Image 1 (cartoon, one colour):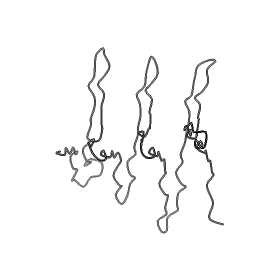
Image 2 (image 1 turned 30 degrees about the vertical axis):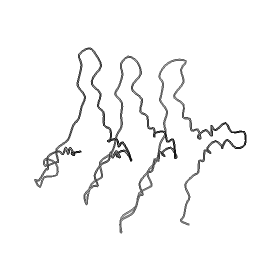
Image 3 (image 1 turned 90 degrees about the vertical axis):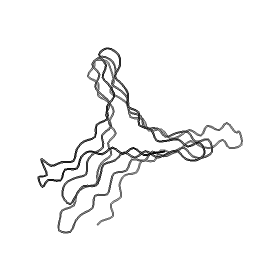
Length: 169
């Protein structure tokens, strides 16, 4: 099928503050009483082979500056709970379920410049400001080996937590 390409305008001037590239905004419709419109981004399916991949990322930075961040955020709620964020891979019937990998990029040093620490991965559960309530829980659980075979039904997945290794002196 035909491709659709959306791109913001190019900023060609020499001023890095005023001549920036144009944004691309995609937003669901607003509603006065009912719920607002949703936004669906989904790759294409295939009747016989693999479905298309989904890529969400920012472009590399130029010679100076930093690359743009990626933020997934649900909206605030004044009455009721705010929306959840879920990362889930699909089920696989003749193969392994897909992995979820969180990796921080390498912090490398340019010659004659002081290097930086490696980036962190932080898991922080929700705060509560309510009486007689608990803050959110952080749970890390290995996968279940759920085959009911009495001979060898498989094993549950391990949970491994390892501190960083120091390679210097």
